[in-house]
Length: 197
Image (tube, rainbow, N blue to C red):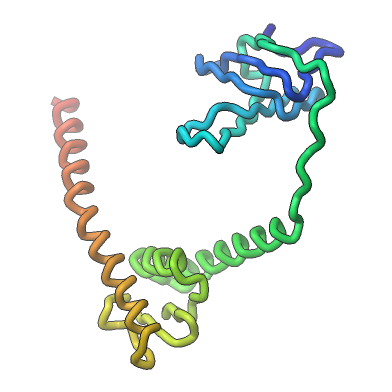
């Protein structure tokens, strides 16, 4: 069956298997089905391999060649879990603030290295922001271009020391990644020259 016909539907909790137009086989539990748009939401085995997680896949049935119902759910599905709307609103606000901060950095002409360093610091210390081209961390430490350890200024203490360590590690990690990137680029150049010969 390529897609459900008139009046056909998938019950929440049923297990289905389908083959996409790319030949990929998807199998999972039906979480939701929208008949007008022919969209099927499946909860599948986790691609990460972690047993306590699931992948959620949206399937457009217009691009599916075959759908098989493995087992149909006869009983009423359990009620949906309640959502913590405050937590969702806070997460959305934080994501929006992060994106606005990134956009500000780009519009202010901050270098890519500065943007990367900001992201690295922000993963550890959420209290960081841009002030023109300077990174302000915990209102105590200022990192100015070119964003090296020597450019970290502030009152001597644990905050400045901690930020300097993060900056050092950031650049050490970047240096350790460079040989891998250079070897990949060299291999690609060799492949390209071999193809053009």
